[in-house]
Image 1 (spheres, helix red, strand yellow):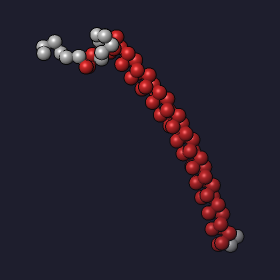
Image 2 (image 1 turned 60 degrees about the vertical axis):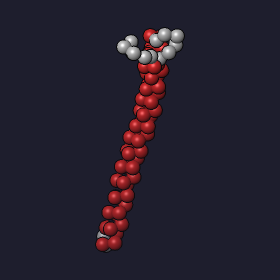
Image 3 (image 1 turned 90 degrees about the horizontal axis):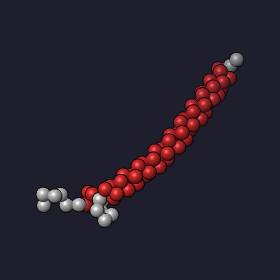
Image 4 (image 1 turned 120 degrees about the vertical axis):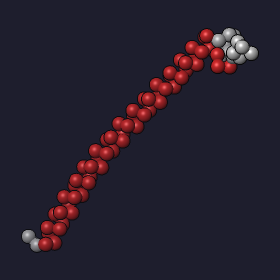
Length: 72
């Protein structure tokens, strides 16, 4: 083989490895995006539950955090 052919084979090999790496990275990013979306949904649910719980404990639907402490 000539030097040019060896260089061409080397470049083709590198491109193949890079394409494989890019595909793997794409899969990781896609999974992370799905995980982030799920975590955001869980945070929304937990925040709503916390707010509902605070309202239930408060008077007349007020949030407890909005109440004046008893020493005022």
